[in-house]
Amino acid sequence: YVTEKIFDCLVGGCVPIYLGAVNITDYVPKECFIDRRDFSCDDELYSFLKNMEEETYQNYMEAIKLYFESSLP
Image (cartoon, rainbow, N blue to C red; front, top):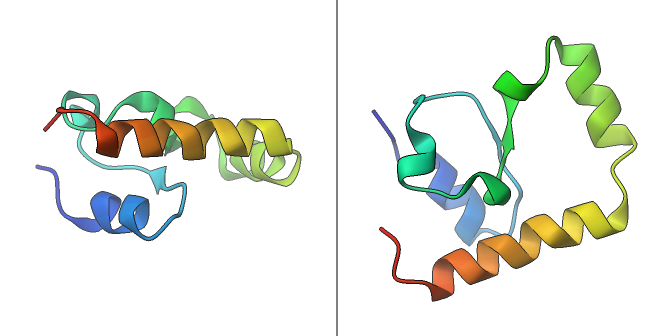
């Protein structure tokens, strides 16, 4: 079950941290969001966010832009 919330984040220019439907990548490419399931705990996620390089962030933003320009659902 996928709701509009992840799409609201993407349209709003945010890189979402997603914890929801396991089939989200059927609708949104993994490069467009941070999957909470990739981290063993909140501290690990926090460390990733705190230490994220500008290039990594820009890669997410570029992937989001390309997603919206594509013909994917």
